[in-house]
Image 1 (cartoon, helix red, strand yellow):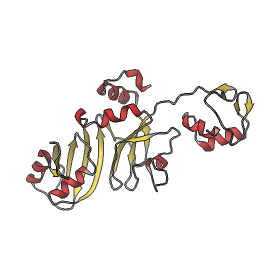
Image 2: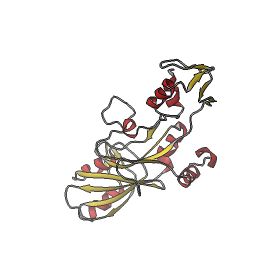
Image 3: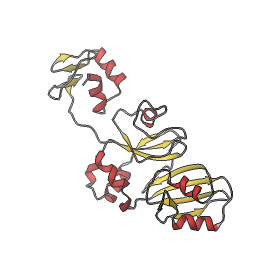
Image 4: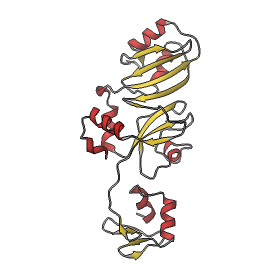
Length: 236
């Protein structure tokens, strides 16, 4: 691989920053000063400012306040894809999805082992949303949503639903089917005007501005791995 890609895959810096370091003569490959475009093999020793860089990706766990209009995909050719919007130096990917027309909390990582553990329906991990529909609803709507609605021929799991206003409600799901809330509402004669995720398991969007991302805190990681039955030091 190219030397600048090596830097990004190791989570050391962006390609642009790597190119700058190389141009300044601060990077060596097997003791020889690297040049832009040089190739690196797994056996090569790469050093920055005389310090040999250890291979192995640092595990990254972050949360992002996705704005409406950002697409949850790793396909970089897609306009406003989530990877380009975040611009992280590590090769991260989203855990699950959030519709382009929806906003709110989404988790991203480069730890492939954790994804299925969070997404598996049988684990019943909660996801909480705030929803606004196009017209006022009654208690029957809330009861039917909570009991489960058949979409695409399959009933949804029972869930928790509570009124927040004439047009707004809170819903907590333990499954993550494609466009589930929108399809549930549509099946009952309502159209979703806005959908905002505020929580995944114990991790909340509190304090996170639109478009902002932060690494999970030590406590968030500890509780995440505890819930998944993984050793605490896996988050380090």
